[in-house]
Amino acid sequence: MFNRYRLQNGLEVISEPMANRKTVALGVFVKVGSQDETRENNGISHLVEHMFFKGTGTKSAKEIADITARIGDDVNAFTSKECTALYGMTITEKLPELAALLGDLLTDPRFDAKELAKEKRIVMDEIDMYGDSPEDLVHELLQKRVWREDALGFLISGTKSVVRRVRREELQQFLREHYFAENMLVSAAGGYEEETLRDILEQAFGKIKSRKERQEEPAEEKERKGGSEISGIMECASEQKMLQRPSPERAAAAVKRQKAAELSLPPYHKEYGQAAGSKKETTEMACCLPPCYFRSFAAADRDIEQFHLNLAFPALCVWDKRRFAYSVFNSAFGGGSNSLLFQKIREEAGMAYSVYSYSSAYRRAGLFHIDITVQPQLSVPVLKKVAGIVEEFARTGLSGEELALHKQQVGTELVMSAESPKTRMDSNAKYVLAGAEVYTLEEKLTQIDAVDGAQLKELAGEILKLCNASICVVGNKNCANLRGLKRIWENWG
Image 1 (tube, one colour):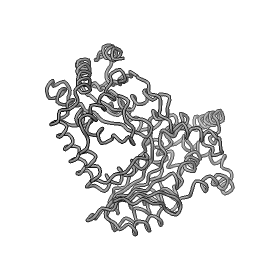
Image 2 (cartoon, rainbow, N blue to C red):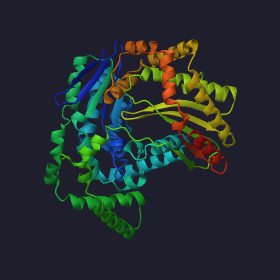
Image 3 (tube, rainbow, N blue to C red):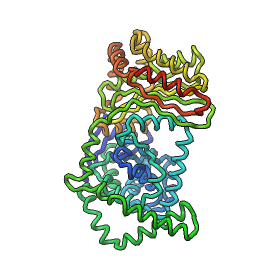
Image 4 (cartoon, rainbow, N blue to C red):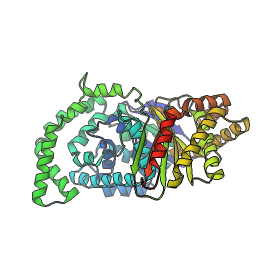
């Protein structure tokens, strides 16, 4: 059973009490992610998320870590294309402490200049790590190419050049623009009484300001702090020193260059202004429209032994009512070890160790992916065989026996995952944020049971069209037949 309501400040809550549980999961989801950024500040959502754990007005980073350990060491955060979340799981008795910690992180982040400089290095290391991971790179690069004219294609981590130049004032401005009560959702699931939870949430999150209060903050901050330009210049110099550790002469030159570059850019408030008819309002309107999909072929050269291929087809959005049929469709096509894709490619042909399908579903668009890791010399034969499987599945669908098997598999996996309060908390938030209907476990199982062969065949025919497929390949270009792969892809079109 769900409970949905708003706190006094307008913050929305979705709660799912679970009987006979001694643990609880709690998350705060903010409706801002990489799709809400511009090319000039791509990565700022992710950097803000990192900085939440670097200290508040009353707690140091070490004290935050100590509290996290005391309540179970299961407090974390993530940034996605569509939201930023702070969440945790603990025993029921420590729920007030978890809620208070999340509330403090969100309402009173310190954004210390020295900590920001250090965290920039961490984030840039993270960007390098993704670049070194072919599994991540092949996925991110493909989405970047197919949505090249839309912010939905931006990398969540952003670029190192942007991260390097972001200043503390910009983080604070971004916070004022997006971190207000009406733009947030609290999701909770687990062992608790609803009235007790409501009191805890009011205490922890009731001081989060409304949009109107946030919009009035900049002038107040300027009056209170004063001299912000001078402190900002000093802060820039400090960050440059900690990030690059150059000589004093080079540090001074770097600060001078950075200030000149900043003066040449449009003022930050022009990107994030709140006035009626502002660019921000235009951006918000654009964020309601689906991105244009560009059929693409992309390649990244990496000195690695194996070759990574990722195919993508335009597919369903997260709120689509056919999402239960879509889950069965994915399970049957490539989602597990008994799927058609796995059986044909790995078990029968022995051509690839890793081969599977998955969905990337967002509010405005979705992709259906096929991921393959293969020896370079087998990349062309594997791609041809995958194309045959795609055409076969779209043409024939599933037999009654296969359909029953995969419906049972999806239902069983759903029941198993629903045992976790964290899974329920996250799932409920995902669909509320997307404006989709939220179902109880029993309702989900009923929806899955109602899926029939005609629905799956219709979905397969709609999604699995090779003429719409995009491909990204990551590997050693000297060891693989890139021309052969691209020729196959061009023939599909």
